[in-house]
Image (cartoon, rainbow, N blue to C red; front, top):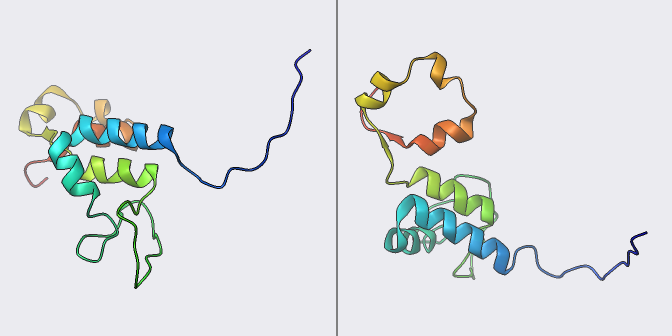
Length: 114
């Protein structure tokens, strides 16, 4: 039988594993330089609001990293260098596109009006 013990609650919500996962996803989608430049602007006074939530920003002081792991993933998907051009639609029928939103988002950004 496995023995369990209760540990004290953590005083943080993210930590190194969340940073690693956020950065791996961002670098895969945007590259190193673009990831750093983009993520440093999330929820900053001179930047833009996170597309994934309504993070309450302080008027006076903000941390240099002012987003969560899901926010970093949302930014990476919005700023991805992946592109969906007309050839994508030549290769995929409408039935092929009956996927979940995650799969569709991972294909890339549209390059032409639909």
